[in-house]
Structure formats: C-alpha cells, structure tokens
Image 1: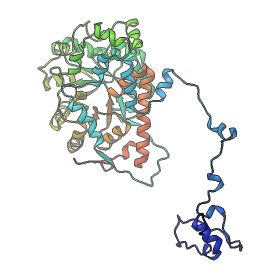
Image 2: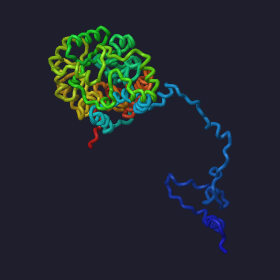
Image 3: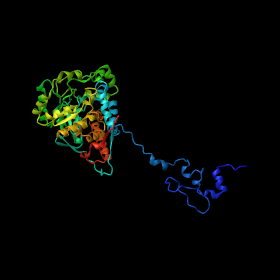
Image 4: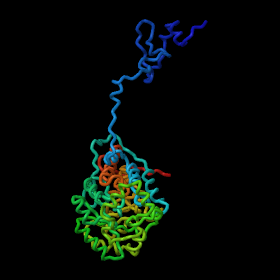
Length: 461
C-alpha cells in the first residue's frame, strides 16, 4: 500500500539528500532565503510545503492585542467638526446642498441655458497634464504674490457675487472677514446685500475692491464710485458682460425672486433646512445695500437697470473718474483685452461670468495663453486675472503657469459660506491653500514666479 500524506514530505522522509538540493536562481531578490545547513540533513517546518508556520495559525486574540486598536472617538456633530471633514471644495458643495434651500443653492450652482459653458470651464482644468521638475528644494513654498500694486498672501481673491446673504445670513461679512484673515482681496458686488461702508467696517484691515455695473442712471453710478473711494477701496472692477440678463433656467424653474418668496414649494423645502430659514427670518431683511429696495426676478432687475448702450467711451469716463486701479471684468477675446488696456485699464479679468450669461462662451482658461502672449507683445504690464471653473488649488496653479497673474473664486467660496458661514469660507480658502502648496511642491517649484507654461501641457482631445 502506498503511504498517505503529502508527497513532498514522503520524499523528504525517504530521501533527505533530495531536500538538500533545492535550487535558487542567483541574484533573484524575491527568492526565499535558504535555511542554514545545520548538518542534520533536515529543514525547518516553515520551509516544508504543507506545514503552516505558527505565525499564520488562527488563534483567539488577546485583549492586550486589541487594546491598541480600540481607539474609539466620541462622535462630533458641531459645525467645526463637519467642516474639518471636508477635504475638497466638492465636499463643501455637498454640505452646502444639504443645508440650503433649492432656489438659493441653484442660483449659486447654476449657469445659463444648458450650462454648457460652466461644464466646459471646469473640464478645461481637467484636460491638462502637469510636468513636474525633480530634485528641487521645496522645503519652503511661498504662495505670496503682487497684484495691482499691493501684496497678496495667496494668488487668489474673492470674486464679486450678488445676493450673498441669501445664500447664508453672514453673507458679505463672512466673505470680507475671511479674506482679510487670509491676506487676500475681497470684491463687493454692486448687487451685494451689505453696504460698501458696512463691509469696510466689518473688515477694516482687509483689502477691499468694489465691483461696478454701469447703470443707465450715471449719477447713481457716480455716487457708488465716490462711496467706494471714501470707504478705502483701492480697486474698481467694472463688469461689461451684462448688456442683458442671461437665461438662467434653474432660477426660472425655481421661481427665484428677490427677496425669496414664501410659496408652498419654499415652505416644504424649508422643512428640510430649518436652520437656513431661522437665520433668514431672524436677521436684517434681504435687500440690495447699494440699490433701492427691489422686488422681482433677477433677470427683470438686470434688464431694467443695467445699460445696454455701453461703449469704450464709457470706459474712458470711468478712467477719468476713478483714481485708483481700474480692472475690466468679462473679457472674452484677445482683441477686447488689448483694447481695454489701451483705454486705461490696469488689469483684465478673463471671465464669462461663471457661465451665467452667454452659453457656449469662450473658456477663460483656454483664452489665457493667447491674452498673455498678446499683452507681452504689446509690452503691457496690465494684470491678467482669471475666474470661472476654479474648484481646486491645482486649478489656480495651472492658471498661473499659463500666464495669469491672479485668480478669483466665486462659487468655490460660496459653497463654503453655505456649508458653514464664516468658518466655511475659512475652510474653503484653507483647502485651496493646501492644494496649492502641495501642487507647487510636487511640481518642484517654491515660488509663484518660477511657474512657467512648461509646467502645464494642454491635452489634445
């Protein structure tokens, strides 16, 4: 009868010499280590096929083994704890959507018509390849830069956004104070829900800019310009892409009005977001701080107040009237960038209004290299600022590498605001800063001035 059991073991038992002649290919780092020859003609049990080493046998765990692993933390439900869990701007967006009624969230999140422009703007930042340098000292990375004659601790500022207290009751106050704390500029919109003077008082140490829509009533425009100057704003940003209102279909479908109306739909929506409605109803009524009280749709307001007859002569009037830095926002062609600089602009903002005006508009990130090359060819020192589509610090670094001097964020900071008020805006800026520091270090770059177009390659579709 043939002996039963493992044939290898049988061989070892019957022929010790066979077990001693295992061949291991020399130079193979993955080969098992040969057991030392003890002179007994046998090998350890762990090296014998079919024998399970003691370390791999199952056993009942001891408490002393489990104790170091049992580090249960007390659950935290505070706003601060919630915000700490957000690692990206997209995380803040998810939080904002849960905490904000549909109409104000969609006003922030949406764009014009089919929202093609917004999707393309965000996709543009994905369709790149970074090209890092290696063996560079990046033990210290400096994100500081100069913009329009003054320093900024980060190469990003807060863009003008209207109706901000509708998104969350702290509104412009949260944005301006967070910007001041971060050492970056804050831009107040003509359509803001806090006054020029109140924002300046809320962030007295901040760098405040004012965004202007030119109205058909020039005297009202002049009044705003003078107020902005008296309040210490050093930069006037005039927006030129709103001759008429874009077709923001989410707002139409939501019945979006200013102020929000208490309809059956909004009441039902409020039942899931009681904190937002409590804040909204217990704070100062929502009005445009720079305008007279208005009730109606956003599109009706734009079409009734903003001037569709604007020309470059109006830009000349602004240049003569405003003594600080003048920036033109809404540039979407190389020709217009050159022309506004010829008419006295200190900077241009490449922007399609966040995709909220003309759908299928040019994408600022795609336009950036051409504008940068054109202004350099003209020996112009005008600042190139970019917005639209930015959702990470890597997006900002890519824009700087391709020729932008500075960037602006709108939705990205508003998601933070809706997620957690001032603390949420702080968190949004912190996330972007960490993104930028990490991206710069991995690119092998320690200063903004070291970024070049060679660090980014636009992928072909």
